[in-house]
Image 1 (cartoon, one colour):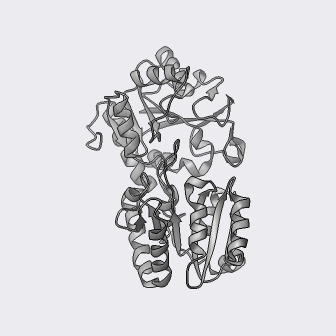
Image 2: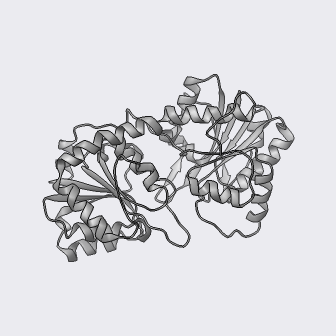
Image 3: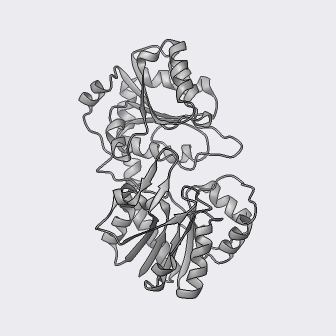
Length: 381
């Protein structure tokens, strides 16, 4: 089975683990196309810094780097012409120029290939030309879809897409990388004391990070707040911490590398994801929840979007934007270390059952086999 994957996600090594698992478990010939350079939200990523000898990677220059829907490859046809894929798998959304490009090349160089795409899009988005055209073209010529959440599946159905749709996260998790480890020395190095409450994400209003900071200021007990990420609210958060008199309890870790995330999570006792809906954004999945749960860190999240489905019965939730309820649960979890000790292992068990790279690879293979008529995948809806 020849599988051609096109996605900017895999420009970093850490994102490719599900493909390593797929190649390890099954007789699959993989080729993965990524940009040579991708301008991410916080920093620019270069493939040359993430080269890979285990997978067949092809890094190609793109126009409009950093723009998921608009970017396009300069010479992707060459990778399809000699590879003759059985499966063409593009992970850039329904309206992506790069998916349109791949489908055109497929018609010329690999008409036998079955096609599928991945989308996170969990809110209804108004498109302008040429993206309206790209989306119509792409949906008509797709044989299946993978959605990162159930809202995205529902939106696809509203658009009239009647082919099989599978719901699974884009990325799995390395349960060896993310696991509970003693981080007491690193905790001391960061200047953290007491119970450590953590947040990982963009510092923007819809992530609820300012409300988390203000809630922590009202807590009774010994705690530190670790804010990992970056964004436009950073200066406001620092100023507000000073105003609330808790600046000595708050630590910032700005734009840390991906490989530094596991040990930062291990200094936490509790991770909070208080996201809420705004006009043009909803939380797509909440990967940081899975990372924390795998590390046996208790999680608390809002009922926004996919968050409660990810947490299941292995953590705690509060009603979206109900900051009083969030504060009550924060105080409860600060006071009750035995409760955190109970839910930590429960979270890891849930991750091992649903979210590891092995589980995602198994689900992915089921999709491919169904596309090629080898077997049916009962998870399709």
